[in-house]
Image (cartoon, rainbow, N blue to C red; front, side, top):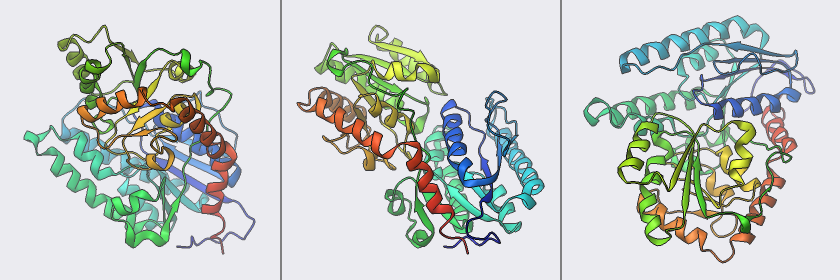
Length: 393
């Protein structure tokens, strides 16, 4: 599908970017990367978000509009009301900048249906960049609410909003072709592009500790939430220890499941085997990854997790579920390890398999070479240049 604009070939677009108010620091990293990619491709760049802070500095052509959205533990009714209010505030700010932008990119904002509708009413080109299924995330997040019916109710609502979002978008950007079939997007194939905002600083993410000299430390680092499958990873630990009693485990990150994880570890007497590191600052992330012998990501739904790329760049093999774009990057026995599902039994079995793999050193080298080739800054800019500019009339 062609994006219509009054710009001439060779002119740079004025771009608006709208995001959800991320509640985790990973979202900040991804948004910052995305802004840096669009910077050389835009004349003016307007970003409506609730994420970036004053200490994040860009050049003068990048305009940040922060929408404050406090994350609190509250009833579902209040949460819905606050979400609608936030979307109205985003829409109001979109109206204010509408005359200054040619295209609006909704970045990881699959739930922002109301601002998307406003963008279409303002006759703007709409690009939706999405990494995971909003419907599946809602199903996992609310599965224990409303007497157990919350997952079904909210996944139904999320699925309805997804249909609206996909239909009103001029272009849909996915991390991989895999979700086209998985999310029933065949009818939108003509307006789907494949790209991502991932690129790494290879001076920071590099091999510092030789793989053979590392302890048998297996870790998960990320958001402690249902869709990440982290509880399944925690429950796999006793099973893995039955086979390899010398293994130690690391869990880094924070989120709604932290208390439940702490209670499980204490109840199973695993505190001497598992270190809960809490949220790991960006400047220390590479150091932690260089300590691991295996990085595990047992997600139910994903786009292309930045953490697995960082782990691979640090010479740390990854064991993950084949969701989203993960299977495009990790080929079992070649650049990492894939597990059939994320049940605790399957995770434990594959942890043991991965640590005992005879070619694990070769796998780490292959993974590092792949990341160097495909996940550098220029490659990321070129992907979005192809999306934004060949379609100009």
